[in-house]
Length: 126
Image 1 (cartoon, rainbow, N blue to C red):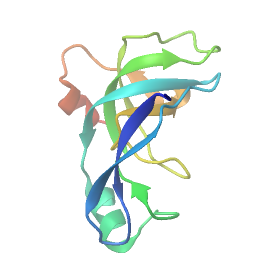
Image 2: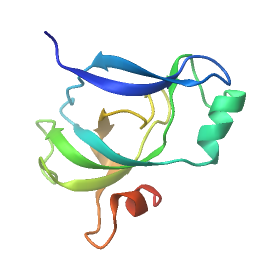
Image 3: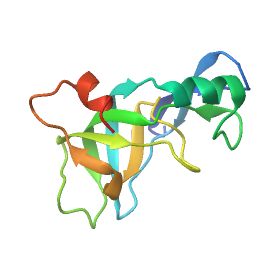
Image 4: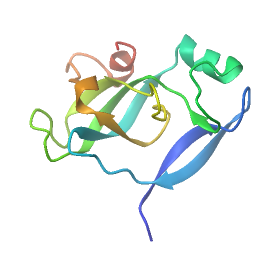
């Protein structure tokens, strides 16, 4: 049986959220695979759901700002490792958003979470 991850998807414009099981992602050489701990809900998220702003196709996954723990790293990643606590800007362009269990993120969009911040506080920073 293949390993899977969960996403919180919106099936259509203005539609309700639904949970979907998707293939477990693997990071490319310059990516980091993260396990979501907190996602900030901001105006872009509700505008995407209500008006389709920045939505390329339906179903879609919302969430732009995330705080997480690193699950795995691509082979060219040297500054991060499994277990690091991070925060990131995510869900822009063709990528699904941060409202999912496991995400692959380009390493240039990731920063280490300050120890003095909770995951919820860090998710609100990017």
